Amino acid sequence: MFLKDYCKEVLGAVQSLLTGMKRTGYYFTHHKEIITQQYPDNKDTLVLPERFRGEVIMPHNEMNEHRCTGCTACELACPNGTIKVITKFDITPEGKKKKAVDKLVYHLEMCTLCNLCVSSCPSDAIKMEQTFEHSVYDRKLLTKVLNKPGSKIMEGIE
Image: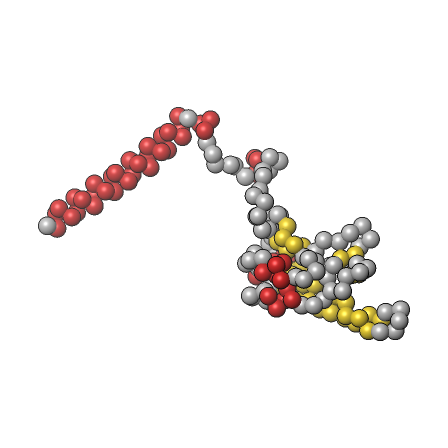
């Protein structure tokens, strides 16, 4: 009984090996049909799927304005604390205090790219970008401030 099971496993392993070699041999002889894309070579022609998620960004317009109100919905929705909203209070021309974003800190090294922060944002201030080259030697370079220096909230966004 033991020898029979042993022979069955050896034959299964050989069959699996031959199946893999058959596939390799096919692509070796039909090299025009290769579907694997070699990344650095195809950088100019690379097309990513529409729903690909690379990192969170905060779009700004030409006047350095963004849509973030500082509500911290993205911070609360993030499952692992990737986003930290630091707010300040500005004085309006009427003399009232208004909450504004001082910094929106994004820790890419901790981000799982789950998109919960983007979907929870009521003012659509952040979105997912399709960048994917994030290799760095210094981990500090993966911590980013999403709002640009001197930026302010767009008029009409509450």
